[in-house]
Amino acid sequence: MKRIIICLTTLIVACTNSSRYGVDGPSTGGNTVENQAIIDYIDQRLEFEYYWLDEVREKCNSFDRRLEWESYLSNTLGRLETNRDDGYVNNKGQRIFYSYIREVPSATRAEVSGFGINLHYTILIINRDNNYYGFVVESVYPNSPAEKAGVKRGDIVTMVGDGYITSSNYMNHFNAIQSNTASTLKLDLSRQTTKETLSVELAKGAYHETPVVYSEVIDVDGYAERVGYIVYTGFESEYDDDLLAVIQRFVDEGVGEVILDLRCNGGGSLSSAVKLCSALAPATMDGQVLCAIKRNPNNTKSDVSAQFTLENTGEHFTNLERLTVICSDNSASASELVIMGLRGLDFPVTLVGSTTEGKNCGMDVTRRTINNIHLEYAPITFMCFNAKGFGDWGEGIAPDVDLTSETNEYGVSDSNYPLPRADWGDQEHDIALAVALASVTGRSITTSPKPELQSAEAEEIALELPRPIEGIRNYVE
Image (cartoon, rainbow, N blue to C red; front, side, top):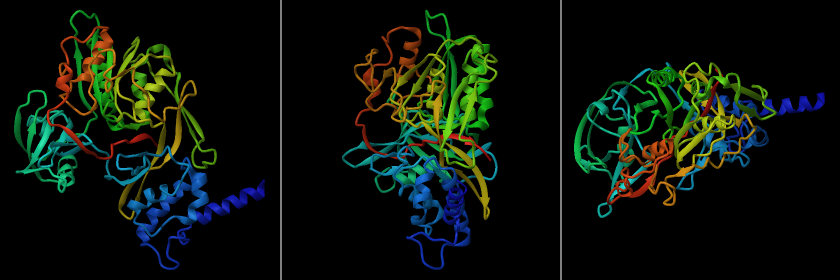
């Protein structure tokens, strides 16, 4: 046994030695010292912690260490065959990996300066004759310049500046809006619900990027319970207090039913997911195991398995009996863990929307500064399981009410769901919210929303950009 261990150790050291180049690398010379230091960081975690580390160790001599660090990780992962659960294939046939390494600010996010608009990943053709494109507003941050100017979820951006959006400029315009790369913005908008057009001019301003983008308490005529509705777009631990404050407000205002809107939530912090479930679960579930994570048995850096339990249940809701979740193919990772974790404890969760992304794996996230570059590195390192030991949701979780199907029990559908159609809280035009409320109250939909309101005229899908799937992140440094 001792001899085997010595041989294995020698193999690992050889793979992580920065002076050893793969078959694609140069025989002499090499990358810059700064770039190589980051590649060494990437290699080290892949070989010791990546869930499919066994194949990494087998193939480490073939990795192309001449590349810049920004492209090295995806190139390396693309050489592996056993890691099919790390990512998805987009509509162009390209492999998009969940594992990532990226440059991040040196300080924790608090207040940012920008326009406050998130765009949907689907790009529309709004004029077939001229091949003009349109962007759809996914959400608007509270108290941002966009919200103050009247921009709403569901608005279609038809012009940027004084020009149309075309195949040659759409990425520049998309980044100008989504990533705040422009200094100012002039946008022409079309509002789907009213068919009105408007023009806004935006200058950058300060706002908080809270993932708690909308909440309200809804009273339904003839239904005894008040319904709390919350839109949560990312499990970000910096904003746990925002999330828990809304839940406490629901309790204070006598809410008896909760609709949790995760249709735009690609995942995030594991600890935030546990806190959310703990806040919703009844007091009798305190201390119960919500989920377990399991790593590769050869992972020598972290415990192979770990359990996460519900804590302080009953501190907010004491006897919530069920949860209704609005989901889509953009609901992934920690969003799916909330659904399957609660179901694993036999807590009823009803899903309204479309099949979720199907991401049952997660990352141990580390942060390091190398040559004044602040890096966040998150390779896939574990798989997730609920209290019943079930973790097979890699193909997605099917909804109880499928809004893309014309045969669902409520008789309303949208083949392009979850394309945004209306502002948050619009019970008349938001098909998902209307159906979720009907599911909660047990009533049929009679006046809202009509199927024809869910299809914008002259609207076609042009292309889709990579979806913002973040993954279940367990911060270890």
